[in-house]
Structures are given as C-alpha cells and as structure tokens.
Length: 317
Image (cartoon, rainbow, N blue to C red; front, side, top):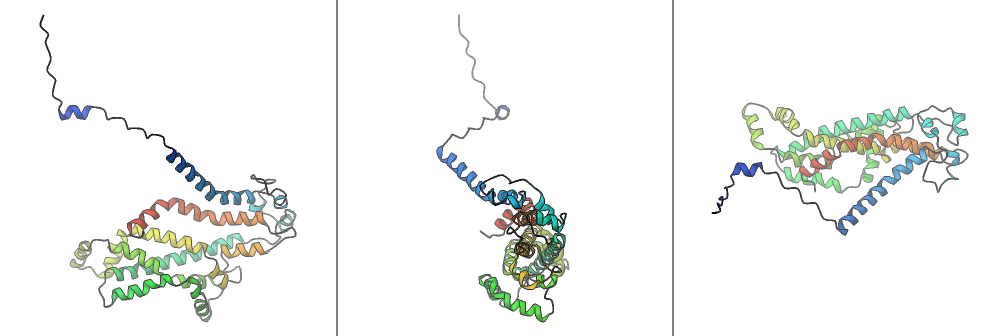
C-alpha cells in the first residue's frame, strides 16, 4: 500500500500574525542583581529614617524622651506635641507635659510662609521668563556677552549679597515686612533664566516667524505662543522656586523681628530657644518641623517625575 505524503503548507503573513507571542524570557538570578537591590533598599531606609525618627519624637511624651532614647517606638505615646503646635494646649498644660509654656502662633507663621513663597515664585518665574526670552530670541548687540556676564552670578555665594540687600531693604523701610523678605528674590535669578532659556532655544523658529508674519507683535508671541508651549518647564521652575523659598532661613532671620513677618523656618528656631525646665521641647519642635515640611514633601512627590523630565529636556545634565 502506497504511503501518501502531504506537502508542507506555506505559512503566510496572516498565519504568522495569528500565532501567539512568545513568552518573555525570565531574567536569570544573579548575585550582582541581588546585591544591587539590597543596596538600594538600604539607601532608601537610611534616607527615610530621619523622617521616621522625627515622627517618633513628635508622638512621644516630652518628659519621657530622655529615659527612652534607645527605643525605636514612641516613648509614652502622646499627641501633646501636635496639640502645642496647633494651639490646643493651654500654657500650664504644655508646661506640665514638659513643653514650652509660650504658645506657637503656627497659623500666622504658615500664612507668612505661604505669602512670601507665593510672591517670590510668581515674580521670579514671570521676570525670568521674559529675560530668558530676550536672551533666546531677541537679536541685540552683545547679547551673548551680557548673558555670559549674567550667568557668572551663579558663582557668587548668596551670603555675599546679604549685607547689600539688607541695607537696601532698610533704606526702603521694608524691614520686618513680608515684602521685605520676598523682594530680593522676586525679580530673577541666573539659574531661572538659564533654565528657561535652554527650553526656549528648542522651540521651532518657524512657528514664531509664522505668527510674526500674520502681524503678531513680539509681546503677543511671548504671551500667546511661547508661554503656553513652555508650560511644563515653567511649572517645574515654579515648584523648585517655591520649595527653595519655603525652606529659606538666614535671610528671613535677618529681616523679620516680630510675628507679623516671621516665617515658619525662623519660628522653629525661636521655638527651640524657648527652653522649658527639663530642656528643649523636642516633641513640640519635631511636631512643628514635621507639619512645616509636610506640604513641601507632598508637593515634591506629586511633581517629582515632571521635575526630572523637564530638567532633562532643558539640557541641564
């Protein structure tokens, strides 16, 4: 009996497309990969441990802190530190708990910090964007030399400008005012101008030239075209500026003398100096520090990816 052999059927492209995709090859275990993950976890733990210790101290009883220094958990857990921060405790209750009897005007300091940081961020971003556009797009004599001279300001330490700024603020009569704290940083900074200029240089000139041909002015092109196209780096710069101004300490310390203009960073230093009978009010101080830092931590975590992408896209490596 003859055996019939069936010829192989040619595989078409459609048949190939129907075939299931091959399963991804699992990564093989390696000692190097394990050590890398362990090292990364160790770095994360070391970075987060100060925040945990701050929370542990804030939730501890101030009278029992010195007797439980070897404990990783809150010592005699209590919310007294947060109660002193938000003004819930009376002066006598705070003293009995081992804290400072003088209350903290937390909401006033928080309001001052928000106002100062908002003024600095709005002014610095707006004026830096205009300066960056002038350096990136406008044609004028010695533009590159002026930009190089302006960029040299990055090499000047900030402490060198404290005394001239203080003399200027004093002559303007703005000492112990919120405007006096914000004014030296409200106009522009070399970093902000450089950051935005790098992005403006990457915008296509054809789009801008088309708007100019249709009769738009340079001012209209800047506000109606350049700013909307640069919304990502402008937002990133605003976040970085807000965080920096929120954490500023030395300049507000020089200018503010009363609660009318005292910001949170300076108020924390004043609160630490109010030493009760048993020593510094570490529980209240850590609670106030945690509450003051929490808004900036949340802000950075929400926009961390945007910040990193914008810095990389702007050419700052």
